[in-house]
Length: 302
Image (cartoon, rainbow, N blue to C red; front, side, top):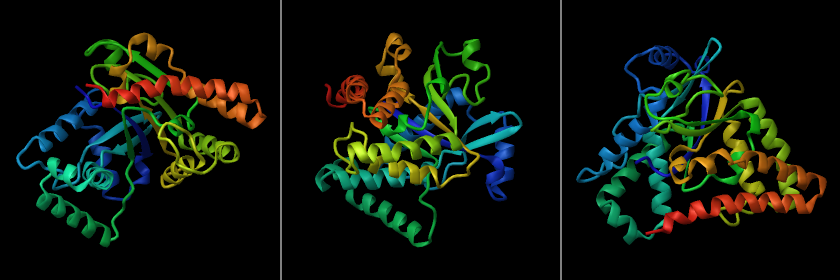
């Protein structure tokens, strides 16, 4: 079972990577041994499960992953490195900050926890990058993640593993399956230019109407949009941006996925805000919250 998480990914053109990474990723993209897109999320999850079920658990891998998600558009290869080691450090740091010491110790023995964080502190002191190509959200899609996309950039697949529809055109931007397994996926893909333009256009509207605070986790705010804009601004302007519902598709039936118009509803809500059409804005916002609050609530189900 895949984790109930959604992913926001940035794929940079392979030419944006310095050597020797550029050559390594080019060779990797043509390798028959790398995980194909339709299986990649499952492979990533299995590796994480094996690390965490050990005794003691391997919270952070010893070496950075050499795998990546790959897309192809025309003659260009686009690469989204997994960055598993860095993402693990960042996730564990958040985990420790969000939970009491006693709770954290129940999952990771304190000596191991301190050693992991000491290694991370050393990484930071060396001036290494903290930029990751992948953001993860468990149990829901944050509302700000819908802003960079448009309705026409949506791709839904309700196929079965091994089907022709699941295997064909699997790495082409904007079409074919995404990364969840089995082949049941909902994704959006757009250009970095469009993503930045839409976020930049939404920021003043949200700031004027909703404010800068972080507020409730379900709500949209200028603060969250600014954080997203800064993250997008760290990458090559010719990159691709992908929203992948990931394992969340297994919490929604086929009809719910077919009728999911979250991106379109967010766009209408922003237009309503800009025009001062309060009733329209509230209606769209309520539809978004009605869809995602019950999914988020499943985190506490038993």
